[in-house]
Image (tube, rainbow, N blue to C red; front, side, top):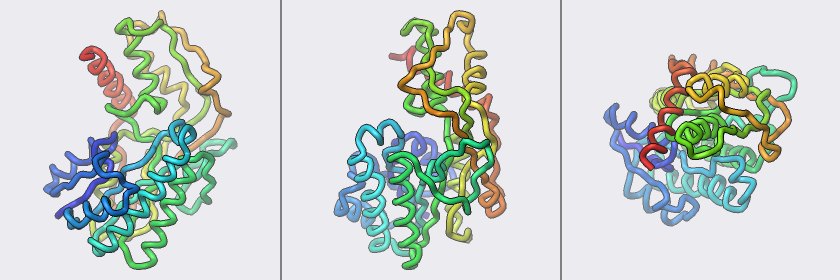
Length: 300
């Protein structure tokens, strides 16, 4: 079986590709060498790959980056998806397509961590979330034309190798920098009272591998832990892992501060369809993420 992975060198891709290779899949990779919004380049890549499945990971995935450059975000996230779907329909019309969207398509709630299931209305509240919702709608349109499209709404994936543009990795990097003397012992944070659904990247790629099974019905699936965790509790768990804990001052950065909000996913549908369930404890994820930053900084 052949699978074509866009964004293969990104955070999720670097974990997903070896997982699929270990299961015997032949992988064709596309990353920055192929501009995902270049329809001709994408078409040529799909023609060469002749895949049985496509996993579309390529995206501008940071909310901050999307707000800083909304034009590029729309080009990559929306036009890139359009180009990929058109090329797949032309070059590999029987392939299963996993479109990796985001739990942020639901927006957030201020009233408490009631999990979003797939029937919840989409209320995207950022450029990133809006473009992911548009990309998913393109997937739905191609599914109506007969393409085998699974639309994934992925909640907060975390683990080693993630950019520090994301909250857990940002905390871990700052702690590692303080430990190595690369920064003063001040850890800058946003709103610690918000609640998010954190899922280890290894659990996430297991879900994606399960969703590639050709017998699985197409449609929309949340990939989430189903557990809401206060951001401040994540920070405290990371701080408990450093011998410098007593020296570190936590300081609110007004530029990072947002109103308290909740975002938790209900993954009942994917569990029922595939038997998948999260297995990696959050404490292990946090420890591995901090160790990865320690190793990277010590090698610099």
